[in-house]
Image (cartoon, rainbow, N blue to C red; front, side, top):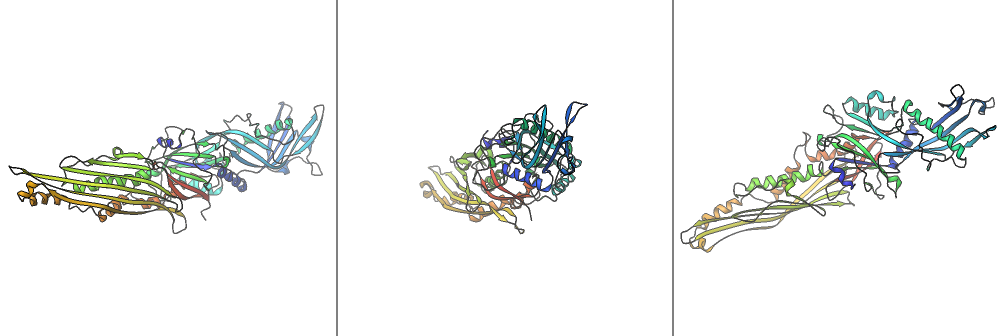
Length: 544
């Protein structure tokens, strides 16, 4: 699927790199949410004729001889290792490869001849266990925290706050219940030079570990998403308009075959002012949202429909459509022109708008313009460069019996302007977005004329006087400055103008998505594509 086709069904895409997710898992190990020490014993249960595996809390619980060595007479095997979990997005879709990497450890087992077994131990350094795991995105209740899942204290506080304020909180977790744990991935599972028999025993130990996680509180959560409800209280979550609030989430994975670290987990969200509900799942993307030269942890990409068009292009269009027509409608008998969707057509780097192109008859009106979307990499800003043309013509005539006296007048001008979305910092040093704008007019052409009959009968004053009155509405620089000020002065969901909305847009992601170890995203480097989809790079770090 072409990436931008996703906006036919979704309003916001948040791709997060595999490296970022793995950094999160490493941090969860440091926090103790994922226990790095894995100790499992294997004992034969003769009455039931089966092996019993037990996960111990400490190596002190292993059976020991008086000299401190392992008492192998009481074991059929054991594993005592230090592990580091990571993921590998090995294919696009909804399945991820979980890799359990052993940094060190000891594996004990009875080997050799079945008739004369020998107790053996082997170093587990650099052993790996890999399994493809289905992911599940499920609603989280407050009492699930530290029961069904293990959560760091700071994240638990954040999630509890959202739940208390009537948000729906979902968690994306590795579903060990539905995963066929027997089907481990032999291409990545490795026991070094220990041999196939040890590998088979190792797999059984690891299966028991994964089964235990669903009962002990699954720590393998890749993210939490918040969805607004009709009862959600946003008092503490910034001045982002309701129309941009996420109300539903799903996900997929993208495998980057060239740069695995920037393979992505992609959250796909719908907003209250956009598609409003999840109607489908996103297809597999045909390219990466994040390129190798972009030094970011994630991105947020808003559909053209919910941000740039809704809060920039449409308001400007309406001001040009309605504001100018209001000036001329009492003087020219012309139509107001096409609506936004009728007037718009795509260009190579933006859009053109033909509001009206009426060049026939006694009353004529032309109002068209284009917008080029330009990314300024050096200044980290997006420029919307507008260029337009206006033309008005009015003709009047009077029957003088022997001839028809005619007079006509016209006004034409070109206008241009730039609206820039640029990264700035607020009073606390946190990055946000702001707007700058400037407009000007040029090539003003005003004129009037009359035919010879009007000259002969000296009645041009009567004819041209009323025509010139029609062009007294003053389409000057101040008119355009006021027109565009009005476009951005619209009140949005009782918040204020678009500048306020942009200033808080960074909070949208932090009220929509929390990664497993907490902290926040900061925005940088705004860009836009020719379709007006809007991109922000995200950097994940502590707010302090």
